[in-house]
Every structure is written in C-alpha cells, then in structure tokens.
Length: 325
Ligand SMILES: Cc1ncc(C[n+]2csc(CCOP(=O)(O)OP(=O)(O)O)c2C)c(N)n1
Ligand SMILES: [Mg+2]
Image 1 (cartoon, rainbow, N blue to C red):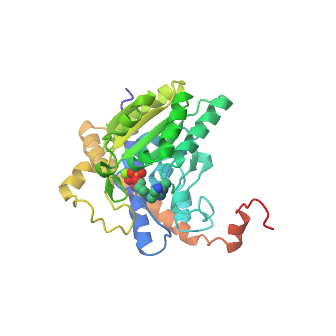
Image 2 (cartoon, rainbow, N blue to C red):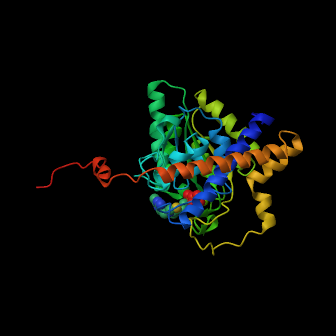
Image 3 (cartoon, rainbow, N blue to C red):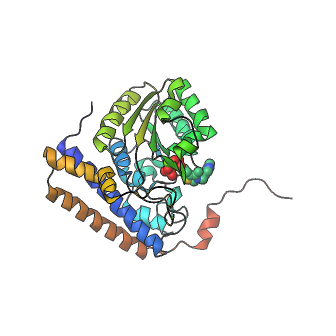
C-alpha cells in the first residue's frame, strides 16, 4: 500500500485548494464575461486530480476531457497560462486559441484536453503504444467521466490496450451524471469497473472523494503499470458540486444540503482527517487557502495584462489539405 504521510497529505491539500480557488474564480470571471466559451468546473472532484497527478512524473503523458482545469493544475501547468487560455489571451497555454477544453502543456506532460467525450481515450492508447515502441517506462493516463464509457470508442480503445498490454491507466471520475442524465438512465451496468472486467484489466472502484484512498490505489496501479504489467482502470466515485456547466440551472437533481456538501467535500474530509491524525494543523490549512488565493490573484492580474492574440494568428495554425478546382 502506498500510504499517505503528513508531508504528502499537506501537499495534496495545497493542490486541492489551488484547484478549488482557481475553479471558483473562473466561475466568477465567466459570469463577468472575462472567460469565454463553455466552462465545466471540477469543484468537488479535486481529490482525484491531486492524488493521481501527484504521483506522475512530468514525462508521464496525460489526456483530459471537457472538465480539465484540475488535471492541468495538478500536473503542474502554470496557473497564469491556464487562466490566460480561458480568457483567450496571447499568453495562454495555446496562445489563447484553444480555451478551456483545449489545454495543452507538453512540458508537464499534459498532451491535451478535448470536448469530444471519450475522444481522449484512443489518443492515450496511441501514446501508450508509442511509449512501448520507444522502450520508455512512462505510463499514460486518460481522465474521463462515466458518460464516456457508453461511447463506442471507449470499448475499441480498451480492447487494444488490453490486447497489447500497454502502459495505460484509465481514470474514470464517476460522478453519476452525464450532462443532466443520471447513470441509471443510460446504462444497466452500475460500475465502470464491471464494464472492463472481460478484458482482464486490473481495475478498482474507490471513493474518489477520499484522497488517501485514491492515492493508495492509484499508487499500486502505477507501480505495476510502470513495471510493464499492462493497462489498468481506476474508477473514482465522486460528486460535482456545481452544475454540468457554468450557467446550468441544475434543476435535474435534488439540492444537496449544506451538511451533505460538507460531508462529501474532499477538501474538508482531508482537512478533518489530517488535523485529527496530526498530519498538519489548522494553521497549515489556512496557509494553503491563503497561498492559493494569492496565486490565483496573481494569475488573474497576469492574464488581464496579456493581450488578445492577433486575428492573423488563427490563420497561421489552420492546416488545410487538398486543392479545390
Ligand atoms: C462524443 C460526444 N458526445 C456528446 C457530447 C456532449 N456532452 C458533453 S459533456 C457530456 C457528458 C459527459 O459526461 P461524463 O463523461 O460523465 O463527464 P462529466 O461531465 O460528468 O464530468 C456530453 C454527453 C460530446 N461533447 N461529445
Ligand atoms: Mg459524469
């Protein structure tokens, strides 16, 4: 078991606070029309991003989807570059041309986000295949939601990953909803780990809001995958504490009471556990929150100072094949 120690637990808490403060600020900036495009926040799901990315190296490639900010931040992408991208500024990770669902930061192994649900999984399979062909020991990770599992390309991808025993870990954030549809309305299979069972992947279903449990389970799957045992799936049961997208009236589910919110919130759970276990103090928690606010303030300042890219930049990165006659 890869158990948490105090230092690691505080590091995870700090990452989760950074993501939370960042996401809440993005919500405000979206309402103020400073952030553009459709925005899906990961508030409530921070434990998965922190525990998974916290164990990866910069050269371990990851792919994420339409709810990508937490994964990017946990993997080490600079806050100012992520925020500037969401604000369409020239200093964004993709020079302001991609926006929220197209974050890329190759230096930190973030090979891409995508708005195509599950479309990142075949790409992660291809990347894992390239690791194998080049003889490296990197492990590729794909983050996706429970809705992606019903897409045909999910099955095609895991079939090949299993057949070729590729160094790939599929991390499913099962929050029980695909857009506004509960899981029970789009499949008869309760657990994603059951979907992959016939392919003989190593798979686990864990409480995704218990960062210690995600840390331990992912750590075991990662060290096995690094040694060449083949692909694995980690299903993390979690809750998104905001609507599907910013602006979602959120009328399709029961309102979550404040008490439930507190009980399910992965940051508050780690906070209680860490203080009780003597891993850190309330002062450390306050410091983590303060540092996150300062870092996000700085990112907002820097993104606002960044210019919008010139319109001509868009034409310079569009590739067109064939000639019309
Ligand atoms: C291929 C494809 N089909 C449908 C959509 C529309 N869509 C956007 S998000 C979403 C739900 C995804 O649910 P899930 O994978 O569980 O992720 P979550 O939003 O819960 O994080 C859908 C169906 C899409 N973007 N791409
Ligand atoms: Mg979902």
